Length: 324
Image (cartoon, rainbow, N blue to C red):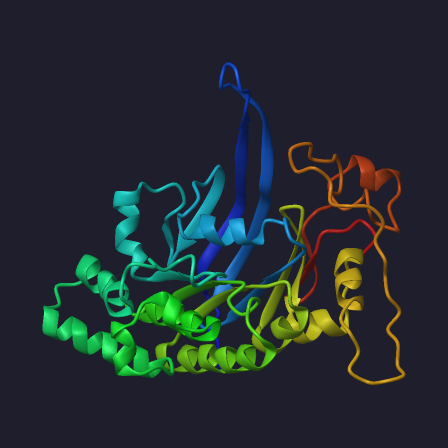
C-alpha cells in the first residue's frame, strides 16, 4: 500500500487524566494519569498499531482521539483542523470521518434492537436518505462484511461472536469514514475467526481507503496487520518504528520484554525471555523520571530522576530511553 507523506492525524502532547474525588466534599484529591504526554503523527492509508500491557492507556488514547473521552491537555488535529476539546455539537461533523470498532461487539449493540435498525441509525442521524434507500444500504453492508440480507431482521443474541464483530465492522464503515480505531477488535475471537476478520479488515481498507489505529495486546496479530507500531507503557510512549524494524531491532527494554514473550513456532528452539519484576505502578501516583524505571533491569539514578526525551534515533525509529 502506498502511503501519503503528510500526516492527516496529528497527536501532540496529549494527556488524559481521570480525577479521583473525595467521598465527603467531592473535591479532586488525585488524578489517574491514563495518557501522559503522547505525541505521534498518523499517515493517511496506514495501519498504526498501538500495543502495551493492560492498563497502559492505549484504549483511552483511542477513545480520546474520537472525542469519547474528554481531552485533558494537548492537541489533536484531523486533516489539519483542531478537534481536541471540541463540544459534542462541533465534533458531530467529524463523526462521519472517524469511527470505532469495539472489543465487545455484543455490549455495543442494543439487545432489543434488530441488526437492520442498528445499522440504519447512522444514516438517519448523518444523512438524508429515505427509508427505501437506507434499507438497501443496510443489505449491501451486511453482504460486504460476509453476512446475509436476512440477518437484518435478527437480534444480537442470534449471532456468534465472529458474526457480531462483522456487524460492528459494518456499522463502522457504513458512513464511509477515513479513520477507524480498532479497539482489540479480534482479541475476543477464536484464532480461525480472527484470521477471517483480519482479512476482512484488510479488504475493507483497500476498498474504502481506510486508515486504522489498531489497538491490541496480541503482538503476533500486530506484526501481520500493522505498518508501524507504537509501544505504550503507563500512559506514555516508549517506542515507535515500522513493524519490520521494531520486531527485528527493539531498542527500549520494555519493547524487548514484550517481544520476548511471543511463543516461538519452531519446536526445540527457545527464546531468551526477558522477565520483568513487579507490577505496573499506580497511575494515580505516577513515578518520577522514566515511568518504566521501577521494573527496568537497566535502571540507574538518572532514570529515577529525569524523564527520558522522546527522540528519533534513526530514520522513523523513535524511543524514550536514556540507555539508547
